[in-house]
Length: 408
Image (cartoon, rainbow, N blue to C red; front, side, top):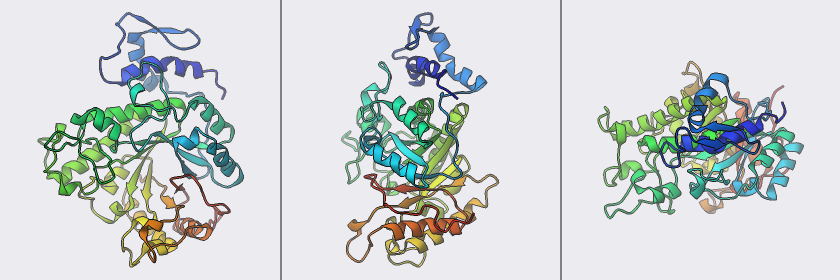
C-alpha cells in the first residue's frame, strides 16, 4: 500500500483537531470554507465535524502498511530518542536482532505532546518539538518493518494540572497537589480529562501508529490516604453506589472502556500498562486499578513486572536478585486470572533491562544478558510470547537472545 491517500489524512488534521477539542474555541463558522492541506482540497466546517462519522462508516487508512509481527518483542523509546540520533542505534537493534516493535512517547510523563501539531490545534501550547518530523519517523519505521505503538501517559500530567487546576487535585490553599517527586495528576473522575487524552490518542492513530498504549491509567499512589483531604470534583460519580475505592475503580475502568470504544473506527489495538501487583489483589485500593475489569476492555494488557519494583513477594525476600523466579511466579498468577475471562487480552509484560542500584547494596544485582534472558525464558516457559523491555535511557543490553527458551 502506497502513500497516495496520505494527503487526505493530513488535509483533515487541522479541522479535525478543532472538532476533537470538545470546545467551541477555534471553530469556523458553519458555512465557512476551510483549506484542507497541501493539495488544496477544501471542505466546510460542517463536513470537518462529520469526519469521525465518515471514519466509522468507511474505515480509516493512514497510508502506511504495518503488519502485526509473529509476536511483539519491543522496547521503550523516548521522544528524544525517536527524534534524535539515538534512533539510528535503535533501528539497528531492530534490524539485527529478533526485536520488532517500538513503544514511542506521543504524550510523555510530564504531559507534553512530543511533536508540534498543526497550527491552531488545541494542543499547540502543550507541545514540544522532540519529534520534529513525525511523518519521516513513521516512514522509517515502515521501511524497517518496525511495529509502532504510541505511548500516551494519561492521568499523570503536570502540564495539564497546572494549566487547569480544576481538572486536578488541589490543596486547601488552591495550589495543585504534587507528590514527593513534584509530579501532579489530573482527575480520572472527569469526562473532560478522558476526552483530552483520547483525542490525543486518535491523533496518534491518524499518524499511523498501530496501537495506543495508555500508561498511568490510575490515581496517584497512596491516594487512599489523602482522598478526603484534597479538593476535587467527582463528576458523574457523585451519586454512584459504593465507597471511594469502588468509585475510583469504576472511573478508571470506565475510562478504558470509553477510550476503546472511541478508537474502534481507527482499527488500532488498545493496550494499558498496569502495576504487576494489581493482579495479586482483588483491586488496588488507592490507585483504582482492577486487573480483571481493565483486561475486559483492552486488546493487550502490559503488566509492569520489573523485579526491582517488588517488595518481598512470592517467597522472594529481595526480588531483584531473582529475575527468573519472580517472572515465573508472577506470570503463573496472571495466566490464571486471564483464564477466567471469556475473551482475554494478549499478555505482553514489561521486563527490566536496567540495573536498580538505587535499591542499595545487597538488594540488587547488575542486569545484563543473563538477567534479561532469564525473564524472557520465564515468559516463554509459561506460554507468553510477547514482551516489552524498559530502559529509561533507551540503552538496551547487547547480545541478548530474544528467543531464548522459545519452542518452535
